[in-house]
Image 1 (cartoon, one colour):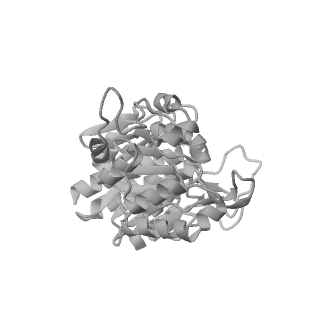
Image 2 (cartoon, rainbow, N blue to C red):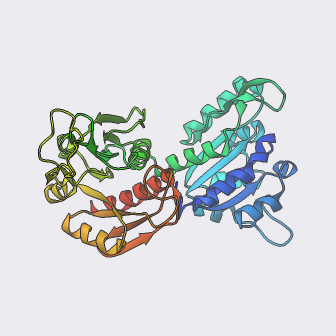
Image 3 (cartoon, rainbow, N blue to C red):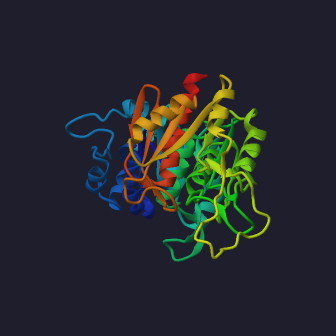
Length: 401
């Protein structure tokens, strides 16, 4: 997940859930966001401003003014791409609904022109009280987002709804708010996994691809609102998502035909599958038996359909085609050649030179290759790699159209 270039203000109020705030800020920073923290005076009783300043690498504001200076809440409100008030106490919720401005959090909220998301956290009865529900309705009517409280054990020891969602969930929600709907109305075609080319009823030519990278890409695109057609080669992995339609295939021919069915209707085409380059000309009807002869049987091969080259040639002006390359030597050189010869918009270069990258693992190391640029990234989880790739496509595709 990538927040690079995004400015997030995390506002913390007087709730016991404030103890989760340092981890929330840490995850935003790790994902590339620039974070500034503001606090109500009561929030400082639950978590130290020094801790949050250390994690965020920015001064933490908890007063509208200090002896030394006036803290410019207007400037901070204009700086932010997202104001996330988490946790939000019942007291602060009431002030937000009624325009009361008696602390730095309220002042920044009233000055903010960005998206505002609020995560209430309180005991179950407080959360369910009609006045709290009315305040949340009022805040929603202003165009703000209320993040529903989670269900679980509360500070009182009771079990019910009122918990602030975990930091990782809030980070996911923030990402959807900042990048969400970026692919709404878009149709995305993705292929993933290996292909198997039959030699006989028992044996085949295949590779070690698992489909993890393509599935992560499909998940991320669907989360951003796209309608995804996922053409999936033989793998034990699968995915369930209301915006993902899966077509399962085995061979390269089946992969091409399934992709071609959806190609013309697709805006973005991401070809991450490890498709066989060759297939047997003849498939034996029976298992090929080992003989006493020293001479091994020969298998004649022919080229499979080059899916990337075909779609690169056939693409229309509104379509954006992404190919993948896995090289073992002269990686960037070969990837650039592939970009040119296949007429792709982008090549994602996978590395096998780094431990933890490649087939069957949960991490990957990539370089994004375009006509006039190359961007190298460190080893990351495949979910984070998917985020990097899709965010790049969104920017490039929107600029091209």
